[in-house]
Amino acid sequence: MYELVQVSENCYYINCPAKIGVYVADKDHVYLVDSGNDKDAGRKVMQILKKNDWHLSAILDTHSNADHIGGNKYLQGQTGCKVYSSGIEAAFTKYPVLEPSFLYGGYPCKDLRHKFLMAPESDVTDFSDESFPKEIEMIPLPGHFFDMVGFRMPDNVVFLADCISSRETLDKYGVSFIYDVGAYLKTLDLVEKMEAAMFVPAHAAASADVKELVCYNRDKVHEVADRILSICGEPVCFEHILQEVFKGYGLAMNFEQYVLVGSTVRSYLSWLKDTGKMAAMFQDSMLLWQRT
Image: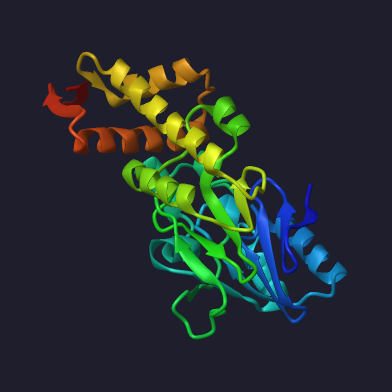
């Protein structure tokens, strides 16, 4: 874990739970793509930087999930580097209690205010700032989270963040986190058509060809949607739908899984309703869902 893997002349990734990208413009200008899940990850990144005599110029945040920005504050404190983000993702990065609050739908209890869902706050510079490296292309990849982005480096390596997961991850957990199902499917269509010397997803193996894996991720989305539709033959409440999803995929419920899978199931319900496959009704002071 935390091995430095070279994928091109100037690009590397640090192998950890959410891969950290590294672009070395030169020894004095090194850019990270994300920073890992916590302060310890930041320390390990610093060790790699020092070992290679690299100076960290900036961290390019793909999105604001805690496992991607948890090392920001430590690295920023150690090096004075900039952290680039924008929009809603920048707001979540500056005010990290927004993530567990959004997932829970209210003020999060202590069980949700931990490093896996709430990173330390960090100062943010917008992608539009003149200091952002002009040779790096930012690629909008919405769906998994609000304004998630990827990055294409000058030597044609593309860091894909969380828009595709490995087969093993999908098969193990069944339901991967998605904020906007419709946007996510459009992002998969975009990535399927992309060409690059190498793709580096955060949660799958680096590869020059990700088309097959994109298709597998898309199939899993439709599988989850079909499962939810099958549960809603009669009018049912959200909690019953969630219970059946957990049972169907053999998932163990705790606070973290309740909010992550629960938020995702709500997103599926919104998408299914907006596409005419699901109806919502209020009966006896309860919101019920039924397939059309």
